[in-house]
Structure formats: C-alpha cells, structure tokens
Amino acid sequence: MGWAGSVWFILHIAEECAGIRLQDIGAPLRFLRQMASAPPRQFGVSGFSPAIVDDNHPVRHYIAFVFVGFWLPTWLAVLMLYAWEIAGFVRYGGVWSPKDLVSGRLGIAHGRWLRQSGPTVLPALAASALSSHSKQD
Image (cartoon, helix red, strand yellow):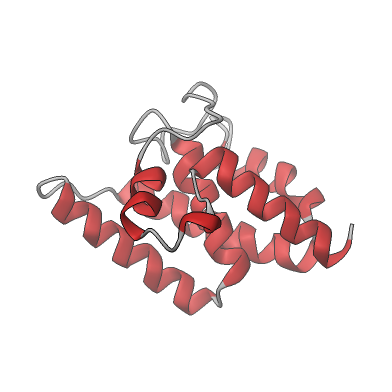
C-alpha cells in the first residue's frame, strides 16, 4: 500500500470513526465540536472490553488516538492524550476517565504500528486489545 495509502487510510478512518476532518482545522470550534459529537460511523459498545468503554462511542476515542499516534512522536501523543483528558475533566464537571486513558494509550501504540507497517496491522491489533475477550479483563 505504501506511505500514500497509509496516509489515505488514517485520514479516512479518522474522519469516519472519530469525526476528525482536517479540512475544518481552520475553524477550531467546528473542528472540536465534530470530534466531540457522534462520528459518522458508529459501532456501539457490544464486544468491546469493559476496560475501555466509558460512553457509547469507544471507537471514536480509540481511533482519534490512533490518528494522533500515527502523526506524532509517542511522547507528544501521550502529552496530547493527557491534555485532552484534562480538557474533558473541565468540560464535564470533574469527570476523569481512566478508561479513556487506556483506550488512548492503546490507540497511540497502534497508530505507531500503523505508521511503520501500514493499515493491514490495525484489525489484528484492535481485535486483540479492544475486544471483550482481550487479556485486560
């Protein structure tokens, strides 16, 4: 698939599953609202490990951080994860989500793998780490 195919894949999956539309980055409020709302493609919670589910859209948070992990070095991606959680803590009136941190760290690691190996690695990584049958339970 090559680098161009990997970039196409990450941009497409981020838009469909996490509401990340880079073409709207020039309108920051719209951009952030899209990421906080229900994404175009939704999967629900069935089959997902309880260790990562804290709302009706666990894929949204996971894929958002696959995207972040694909583009940023790990240390910066983790910093962004914690900044996002702190912003959520403020926005949602003191609600902290350890499950989002688990999901985000998995997403970042999987994004790094995707960057190195291409999109074909993502289904197996996601299935082994996110399913209700994963070792985390």
